[in-house]
Length: 433
Image (tube, rainbow, N blue to C red):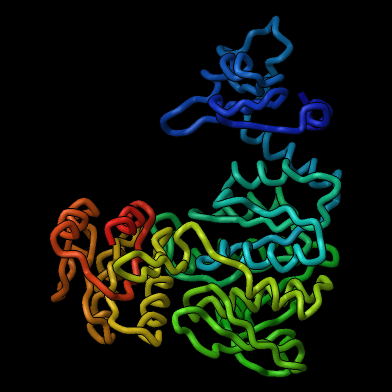
């Protein structure tokens, strides 16, 4: 079946699912495969559960006499091509976002800013991979005026695959840093992969790239692009510039458009590193016609969630929960910001940084060396990688050990930074703290 033929079916059944446990009436099930599952085995059940069609790529699971089974060579490729075709049919203006750190927060901030003027579709949660991105695009409706699509990567070529599906009109790389080195091989591999977004934009008619002018890694690969710049200064040469006013603990920032009137905004974001995320959202919003006052309102009223730089007040402490992800770049930024934060006393509970490959031991040691220079009252380290470092800080093998200690020895009256890779499960500590 061709993409065009499949699209004709999608127009009549415009909901897709890849989970046989979630089969809305009249939807299309795509049988995807992974290391430990084969969606083809659940295609018949998906039809029983309410799907109108099931897209399969293995003959053994197809009932030839049942026209509800749609056979394709590769179900994932079919899903991706369907999404690209849908994107082309609607012609919605799309902002594509990637980066090592800050892409999800920037996406959320940008969606808040653009929603002041437009009907906006944006990536939900972390649906930013080769499955989540096409599913996001297939949620596009004619009434959507702008879409904000987040794209993640853990291996070379990942962004190239995604931009070929998304075909963004506007693009942003928030930054490049030390993350997923096990997959990328090196920092240069990270830069090259994120830069695949720029490679696409060089050939995108009327494409615009929004860039942090103070980032040498991004500026170094931006040749030949139509750039709109923002940055952490109040230089009139920037389209949007800004600076941190205070972090106590929430970020208060000042920004201006083309060196004009200055706007001061109190946000609900914890961390000075969120300044650039806010400026990027403001820059794209203003370019698309959102008014400055509307930008202020959107930035001021956005409240983060999903354990991303959010302040959580418990009966005993104030937690800065940043336990969704961690890499050397984001960990360093979080610690330096926490050290500057105008609060006391301070404690840090840090979990291992995953997927760093051969440099993992050295990167974890660098973090504990940094910790030794910061004005923190107490530090707890969680995980095997931190456990092998040389340092004076208290160590725990896992979250369960921490929870056991907290039952007898809970900190009281502290500001506590909680940061680590999602797989360490530090988010389970909030109820105990």
